[in-house]
Image 1 (cartoon, helix red, strand yellow):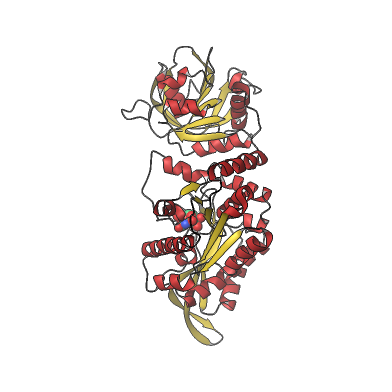
Image 2 (cartoon, protein in one colour):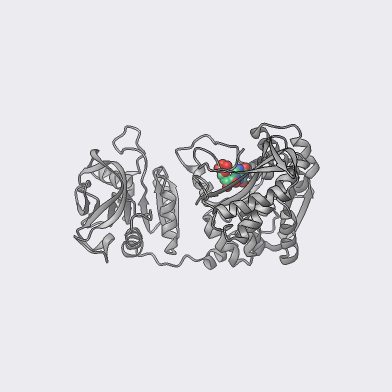
Amino acid sequence: KILILDFGSQTTQLIARRIREQKVYCEIHPFSTPLETIKEMNPTGIILSGGPRSVYDADAPLSDPGLFELDLPILGICYGAQLMMQQLGGKVENADKREFGKANLTVQFTEGLFAGLETGVPQHQVWMSHGDRIEVVAEGFETTAVSDHSPCAALRHRSKPFVAVQFHPEVVHTLIGTDVLRNFIFGICNCSPNWTMASFIESTVKGVQEKVGDNKVICALSGGVDSSVTAALVHKAIGDQLTCIYVDNGLMRTGESESILRFFREKSQLNVIAVDAVDFFLNELADVLDPEIKRKRIGLGFIKIFEEEAAKLGEVDFLAQGTLYPDVIESVSFMGEAPIKSHHNVGGLPEIMKLDLIEPLRELFKDEVRELGLELGLPEEAIYRQPFPGPGLGIRIMGEVNRERLNIVRQADVIVLEEMKKSGWYRKVWQSFAVLLPIQTVGVMGDGRTYENVIALRSVDSRDAMTADWSKIPYDLLGVISTRIINEVRGVNRVVFDISSKPPSTIEWE
Ligand code: XMP
């Protein structure tokens, strides 16, 4: 496997994606991972990621210099390249000409990283993002490519398997990016492309069996992709030792609870306990207007109900959870920031209930989870379901949450989804949904004046929910959705479309 050491770049995860696309397994770990731990991981090669700092800063993140004594192939990218130079005796300085965006790369050697690429002219398009540049090359290294503003846009060691690039091979705008990464992992590291879903299932099933033994496992099923795939995978490993608990909080979309439960009960042999906690949650939310209080009450309420149900099962030792790789990386990131919204998931459960965690998806990205779900036989409808927030419709009703307002937002939401699916837009966007606003506006229906609710339509494009842009849905489709909502949903006389991006807005309204 390939080990990626993270120095805080926005694109570190992309490096991992690109490498796994080549069917080579890789992991991201913080730059500060001790040398001993790295040795234990026994990687085939190491990649030093980019990062926002300057290597000459007093508090710059540094790798253990022992890294370069391990006799392993190392690729430095951007900050990683500069760090390699600095730590091996070269010099990095602030450049008077910074390079951001597209740059033209002239390759000088076609061996190693640039095997198979043309040298000289024509130049290759690469993507740069740096304010510092390598001024003095460390001893033993030579320049292998230049760009307009980087006399050392790529380097290699003459006798050791150390290579470095100033540009970012992991981004799509670097047209030769895949070639460069392939040359590193296959040419320089000699990896084999043998990481597949089938091999992942096999090794994970074995791992879960060994860890769990004869003990019992519980899992919170939400109906989302992650928890469904987790449940299916753990069930494959240990069968009846797994019990799933589904908490109906009354904040789900129309028919969602039913379809999830039907699938798991009829199509799989999974043990599912469904808890009807609708009254409890509506009671908790009565008169609550503040979004954060809503989120906290829903989150704590979930933990309370889940704990009560789990207690009925007797001795349980493990909690299976659908943590994905991006969550894992975020939680180890050294540039931790305060959360914008308190996200609700089962995060607090293991500590409170003193359970050991089983997280079979913690090495996977979302699209890999989908692929895995299909391989495990889950229905496409469940696999390609758009993300749905833990607090559910509770945070899509601005102001007070009650049965009447839930009813309105549900009906509007059904129409949005129906029309998005019918037109083929459902899978093109990241999320699309209705939000019920806390205001009323004047309208005219028939000959009479109305004074009713407003529905906001939100649809965004995103790759990872960290950033998002509003979807450019055709006007005709917007028109159909608006007309249907106003005609079919009692109590709504106006529909507006949200045209804000994230940042500065967020995807959900609360
Ligand atoms: P925001 O609104 O923060 O949402 O831009 C980003 C993504 O996260 C989803 N979301 C949640 N998911 N628990 C979840 O599991 C939550 O509490 C939660 N809040 C927001 C949101 O739907 C979007 O995909």
